[in-house]
Length: 329
Image 1 (tube, helix red, strand yellow):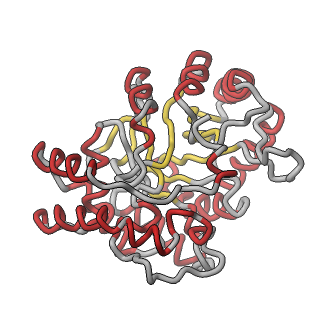
Image 2 (tube, rainbow, N blue to C red; image 1 turned 135 degrees about the vertical axis):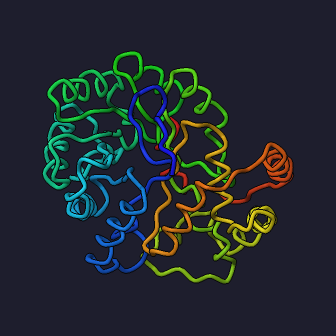
Image 3 (cartoon, rainbow, N blue to C red; image 1 turned 90 degrees about the horizontal axis):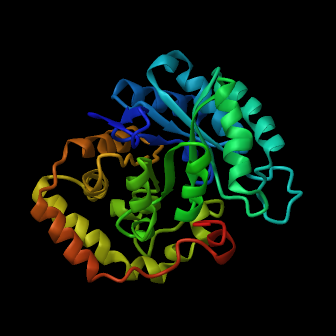
């Protein structure tokens, strides 16, 4: 797997990373911890060098798992984590990016991840009560100077916020949901990243599993699966959105690839500074995702996908209103 540089940051990672949230959080019963540690290590052995977690996943337990799994490979991998949620549930917004809270958060993350410095530290959601300049220059910039953080990132930030943050502290990467069935970053964020030399990291690049082709309107989710509360995963929306999967299957049939591989290959073909981070708990899915890096989509392939996708109207919001309001600020 050829490495990719996140923008003009000099931070180089594998073309496909691993989103680690689902290893023990938000998707049904937690898998066996030892099996998930083995999965993370199998990813390293297969060339994955970019791993994504967050303080809020658990909370705390996901970072702890990732830290244990990657400790033997620390010099060979890049670990990204995130701050910014109000874990004490004391603020109406549910967010807390006050500089003093960030300093508290980083110490816990360093300990759980078993590292001396965090490679890429994202603000998880933009805090409406704290100016982004106070986050970027008043906290993260100081942590970088102290050697506790190497690179600064933003998650689900809007273009104006990205510009304001980057003006006082260089932003290495922006993470947001992006896939064939959620293309909102194309409106402003991707062009802003390109202009400023910032990498882009799509999470849920497989549409939370929908773009694998294994989910339809009859699929039953467990009560603690977070997809049950997402409008786009209602049975009606899943049925209506089947044409997106049909398109991926059509291209996959020509390339001897799965729908998931085509979905990832499409992202990789968009820009050389885009690095998707699909998540999985299964080794065969991990290998399938990694295999997408070897698939070449021609100009004609890309044109066909774009033309066909333009005729598809995806139904259902990706988040309920309260959560949607926390994005693209």
